[in-house]
Image (cartoon, rainbow, N blue to C red; front, top):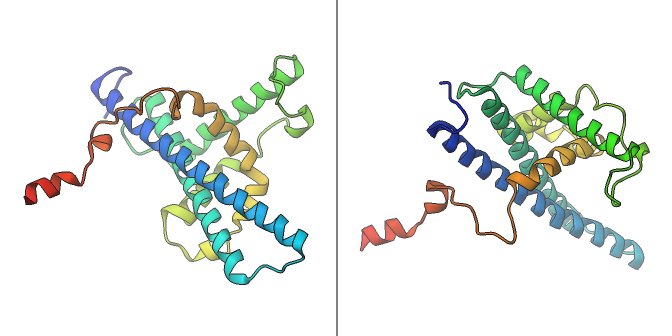
Length: 213
């Protein structure tokens, strides 16, 4: 189905996009909290000269892993949803098309950061230009989709052998740039009311309870 900006389908699609990004934001915050625990515990153990137990290390890794995988999943789905809105279609987006779109958006954001640094308009907290390469790694979108599929979307045997640590080291900067670029418009706003997401925020287990009575 085709739709146009502002029509009923588009309004519903935007509600779904908002919901998906809020889920992405929730996942990232969970990841931040869990990663902080992991880092602080490692520092405390090192200072105290304590060797962490396998149980503690595995549990923290498990929680941090799960939160980051959810972040990858919801960010990828949000980007595919954004492409669907840009092209005005409810049809399934082909993987190759999604990858091209993600690469174009990531490179656009990267070049924007580099330009701001070079022309002196970047905020004071911005990194040095040396942090940012001239372009996004060509395999980034493919790896993004692959890790989303096999670590979250589908139950595959490869999950136990795919290193999320290596993925994080190589590609987190680009995921975070995309996330940060969308956060201002699509994220939660601390000073405002929580958005009306129609049936999503109308959900209540009290409906069943009331019917039972």
